[in-house]
Image 1 (cartoon, rainbow, N blue to C red):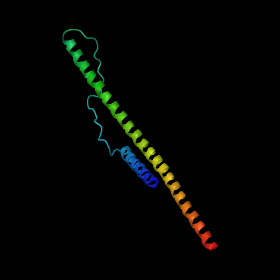
Image 2: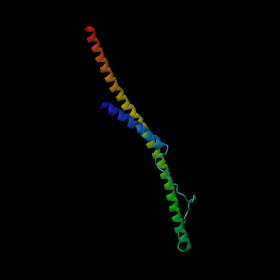
Image 3: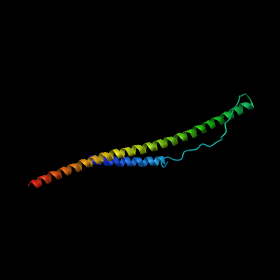
Image 4: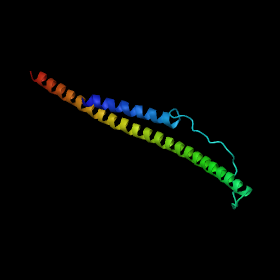
Length: 130
């Protein structure tokens, strides 16, 4: 039972490492949406009634659109950072778990091999005494 648990742990650690590599290289997750729009900044100035008021409202709407574009591009950068951190984290955890379960698997095999060696030695001593 311990052997099977160790083997399953090693396989899941390797699978996690492979998934982390795939996340890191962008296989999972689609392309990020890029906002498009004017690249210049608006200055609405002082609002007065009449034609200037309508220009003021129009310019403020354009400023809000520019701010939304900036927020969208910042979110794209945050998503890229999170994808990198998640990928490296999965790789690290996968390697660590594969090594830990591999170490326990080797200890289990050493115990079994040691017992078999003791049994063979005991039998050969008994056989020689006869």
